[in-house]
Structures are given as C-alpha cells and as structure tokens.
Image 1 (tube, rainbow, N blue to C red):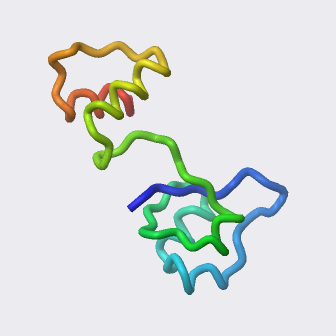
Image 2: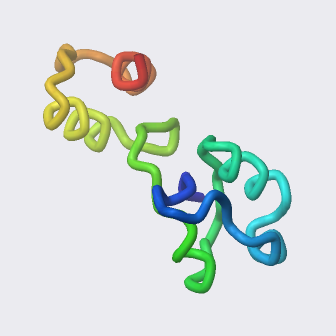
Length: 90
C-alpha cells in the first residue's frame, strides 16, 4: 500500500468517478488535502494523484536513514526503526 495526495494543479479536486477505483474514504481524504493509502493505484487515476514521499511505518530502517540523510535530520546509528520514524516525522 502506498500513500498518495492530490497533485498540485489547477483542478481543485479529482472527479467523483475515481471513487470506483480508490474508494470514497481515500477520495475524501486526498481531496481535502490529506494523504490517503491506496493499494495498486490505477493508471487512469494517477493523473489526479501523486505518491506522497513522507515516511510511514511501511518504510524500512534503511529507507528512513536515507530519507533523514537527504533531509539533514540527525539520528544515531543505534536508533530503532520506531525512533527513526519518530524523528523523521517530527
């Protein structure tokens, strides 16, 4: 499952028909400016949404460390995945 958000565009929201593909809860969340989780985002819907690059619990410790390195976020080599995630999302 991946996290998606509404693309920044001139369109204020995705059309309602995309709920057939992603469900109403994800549609409502993303059109309100939030981040929604969608499993297997269909290609015909990707024109309205983009993958959100924010860390979440699905990331590995190595992915979190790479994200933190590229965003100048300090961490200890001994930090657990939970500690890394807390620091990356603070």
